[in-house]
Amino acid sequence: MFLPSGSQDDIGRVVSSRNTVYEIFRNVATMRGYKEISTPVVEYANTFTNPYVGMKLQEMLKWFNGDGEIEVLRPDWTTAISRALRNHKGDQQKWAYQGSVFRREKPGIESRQVGIELIRTSSLLGESECLLMANHFLSRLKAKDFIIELGHTEIFEELSRSLVLSEEKAESLRLAMHDKRRDEVYRIVMENNSKEAAEELSELVHAYGPFEMINQYEKRWKDRPLLLNVIQHLKKLAHILKESGINDLLIDLGRVKNLPYYSGTMFRGYFKESGAICFSGGRYDHLYDQFQKNVSAVGLAFDVDILAEQLEFKDSPKKLLVIASDDSLAYAEKLRKQYGDYIVDVRYEQNSEAVYDKVIIIQKTSEDYEVIEQ
Image (cartoon, rainbow, N blue to C red):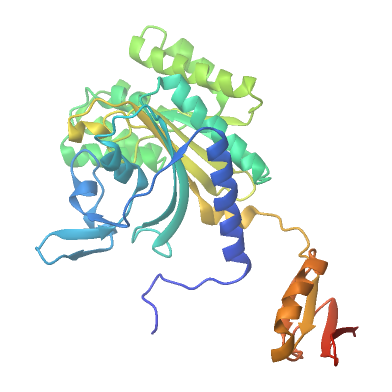
């Protein structure tokens, strides 16, 4: 009645947890050389619905402005930042952001994110920095048992490039690959193509698991230069991660991009116990084409709400109640310095429902104040 569907108020620990995530992220990003960037929460819809980005208007929170143009609440940070940096002339390559995105497809509509974007960096440098930064950040959060998954857009693109499919069937195939529906993949490809092509793509659905699986495909594709190059690139990236102490890696060679602007390596981070995705991202070198700019770019976004749920709280500081009066408020404020390790609550009387570790009363004497501990 008082809030739109999908909106909610938050109080207490959940808010504190999110703020902790924001604070630690900002510290880690600063120490790794990132510069902060922010974009407006209100944007033109066409920034996100154009063919280069390909987001669906029906999934956005939108309205018409006074000029009849459609405006939306920001549904995606990466696209907004590319718009903001399209004419940036400086040498800064590493950018960090924090804030909300809004999509109807998401439970609760509003999703809080922190993330990074790197532009004009070589492939291995940018991709490894994203994942090493993710590991650094999650380690600072004391997040336990997470695993990194690697994939690449070009594998599915290359294997499906020669297929005879209508635009509608091509999209159905992509969705079937995304959902890991092997029988459906086989059926769609077989309708107008060879059995060999159907078997190859449907088998790719199960090319998911321990990273060592990639060695099988390196042998299988040794005579296919483009696919072999992709495999060897992923192996180099994995080697950098393992040399840096990151050993929990998965491979998903059948993963497909969910937005048109992805154009290379893709990655996600999962918590092993819950399966929740705590970050996702990848390369999107063609996103800047819409601005007639040739800019290499890669980045990832962390789900603040998922990360906040993982935080382990230490015991809260002890609580002190100071019972004061109009005349002793200034003196009560001075007492805070003597109780630096306490949460100090100043009131005129004690609330019977509140629990404190210590209660003191300030009484005014003829010349000074007297502190009485209960």
